[in-house]
Image (cartoon, rainbow, N blue to C red; front, top):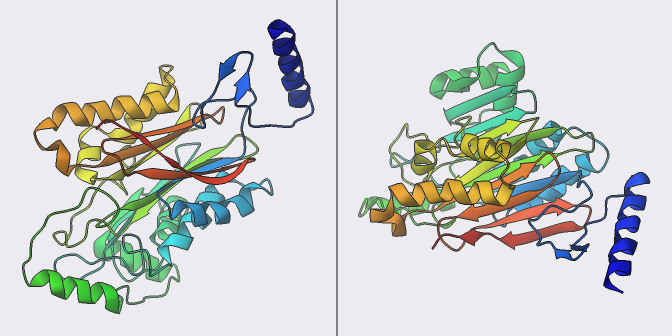
Length: 331
């Protein structure tokens, strides 16, 4: 009976594959797959993003992916939703300022062909991710920072605005009374939206955008705009993006590491876990104060995530719908 059942399931899967249908299979041929495991049938399109606000970002990205659009367009459109939301206090407009009261933004974008663009310490621009894409497409460079990035953005027609909302300004003034710099480990004080996607044609892209740690030193740049740290995409292998304490991600070139581990045969979840273990091993003496999380996606549509401490979740949108998943953690 069991062998007949396995044979039936196998023939059904092969039949749907031949018809171009991509069901999300959780139990096949006696093996049970978790949400983050790869089904036998390729999953595409699919988009992943960090944190709960990734759900609304995914919805916007899916509008493009579901119409056979390019993953690069999808990830840019997706994170722009969060960049423009003043209620999201760790990304874009409404982000908490640095210790001088200035909102500085970092972002990068990358496609399957290693085309990259990045901006760091950018002020007065609502959508740094779009400026990063213009750097990629309109300049011979891969990264612009500070005043140079702002000058370029204005030349490209981006409007100059005040990113400091009354709510963020009030928090900054309250912070000034003690001026204590003690970043929290999860989303409450700082964080990033990172998004990676695989489109119907099998093209991978990713992006990452943030206002960085609240009340940081002016000029501080974390991992988010650094290709290989906060984001990496290889069209032959997969993509990864990171969230959490950027300094710790930079130390291990985190997202490049995750992609290279997938190249060596690890699943996305295994690769994320091994990268987290490196952070843990090097920072055990202060690990309770650190959060780092990775999400990863390979060219087969298999995905996974892992983090240092409990509390990190990520959003996934594929043919099964849009949902939030709690990542596994080292602690």
